[in-house]
Amino acid sequence: MKQLSILATILMLAIGSATAWGQCSSPNTAFKSGEDLHYQLYFNWKFVWLKAGTANINIRQTTYQGKQAYRCHLITRGSQRTDKFFMMRDTLLSYVSTDLVPLYYRKGAREGKRYNVDEVWYSYPNGTPHLKQRYQNYRGEVREREYTTTACVYDMISMLLRARSFDASQFREGQKLHFPMADGSKVAQETLIYRGQKDFKMETTGITYNCLVFSFVEYEGKKEKEVVTFYVTNDKNHMPVRLDLFLKFGTAKAFLTKADGLRNPQTSIKK
Image (cartoon, rainbow, N blue to C red; front, top):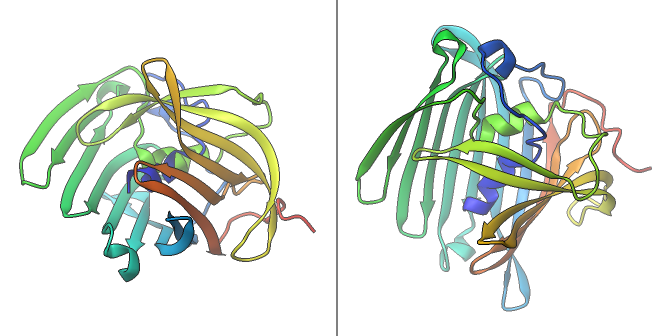
């Protein structure tokens, strides 16, 4: 599900442009190895909300090409009930350095009867970001390209990992945030809108969080179309706890059900 995968863009807060490896790096203050986040997915079908499946994000410290790195998985699985209408099996994988520089990205998506694969390999010759991109469609056809830029470029997962450490206290309600995002075939400029803060009670756990709210939007000409609304904890974890998804074939929601291995205290929980 494309819209759920956009979960990884939740806090792409002012990443901006840079020209060197050191400028693309960032301190990590939000997560640690061993973090596991679990979500329950719901889909609105003919005015009835159905359990549509689950999602999981997990982070582990490992090595990549002989160097210390973080590996992050985002996995979504539809339920047997919703498989009758639309099969969803998405697995996203990202490796980043310990200072959050993107190294590798892969997305394998089975949506309906189609299975597509996006891959991105990052390198930084002379401090300049260089991407090797590969896309394979459900017919097995492959497209490859290379892309060099003076700006730091991120994929869905590496965006999430870096952006979770940013401080959003200076953002203004209604502020638009623009950022570059890569997949297997292109690098596109995307847009988030900061909607402000909101308290809300989780339907799955009964916990009330103070959250930062963002909207991911797309444009059809000059017309703005909301794709996903994100609720992210207003604490140092910047943990996504709720998503409202506006799909072509209906509306869906994702709620956090369990969080293990968090780095920081959950100060956004309302007593």
